[in-house]
Length: 386
Image (tube, rainbow, N blue to C red):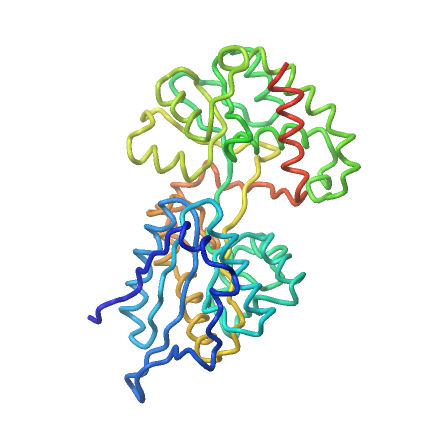
């Protein structure tokens, strides 16, 4: 077994301290990413990723497995913890594009917004197809929406209801039933401050947009802000019936802690966080999850291939992307990340399908751009301060 040099880690402070142009000083003619000759030739590619600890752990598991079965490819893993790291990487890619340099980033893990930015910058990523990445045919079709075939949605997560089944017997199936349950069980429901975590922001956003046409989730025109009043009133009316008559815990973990301690019986939570803590016994054995209708928001995480003009690296990158969509790796998405798989549910084992049967009904994707952030500001002013 060859000794891997894959797990090179660069801390966020170091990346941010270096200017974008200095990061791309070497172009493809000055950098040799292929070593050896003949049968021993090895192509080196890099994967840049950012996120939580579970993302790092996942790639540190997957990459050695890939390298063991693909002796001619080395994958350098560059991980930056959540924060500004992802922004620094995309800025690096853009700077390289403008300077006609090699960014030395072959695969980038990012968001749907990066695809839009790619187009604005003249094309940072190149189009993928089943000709080059055969397992794309196994990807859930709805997850490919909006990618323009420029990204591989290899995993996903969503916000769901997490509840204590010992205390909650009449589990809500719809948003209307949830609102009724909250008022009939004062103090037993909490959602976190939406400005400190995605579970809370999803709850606020879906509550407001449930009062609008379904198509509103895709509107980016600021004029729609005038239509938020009805949904904001629902949140205002709900406040006295929440935990401690309107206390909003900080961060996603804040409400999970309340559920774990029995201070509340139901919360909105990220599916992967809740599943991981259920598996680790940090939440009671009586904890169960459910998606409601209309669903809370969620979405995939994407892998994008950067066009650096090196055909051997492109081919190696496509081989890696194809590997990530295999059943074995997708089972690791479930077992290591507690995420939803990127491939179709029916391609997984019955056991894995059963793990997600209560939350596999889907999620909604919010495509309102900066309106999401604006809504959280309005919530802070009109709901939190009342």
